[in-house]
Length: 134
Image (cartoon, rainbow, N blue to C red; front, side):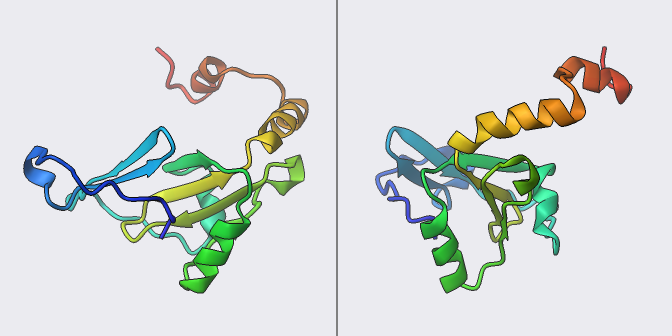
């Protein structure tokens, strides 16, 4: 579905084999293993994936991905953070995992705008506000 070439010659890595899937994206690898015991969460409002569990992948242009999702009838959310200029596309795989395709060039400007809007707070100060810091 992602259009990534799949690496077929996978050695038997224990219990997940032969269901283990291994994809290549240049020098980057994406390993998918089944986890039947995980609770699956599917969202009607896919913009929720901006702050839910997901993996992000940098792409030069998400239009080819958007077209493939449409061709396969897979719901997606495009540019939920457009107010700060972030160019993103979110969807979920069949197991409910969130996938983000992001144009990295939009990230720097979006980060600057977010700091202007919300203030420059590091992760530790945010965790303290939530009562989660050590």
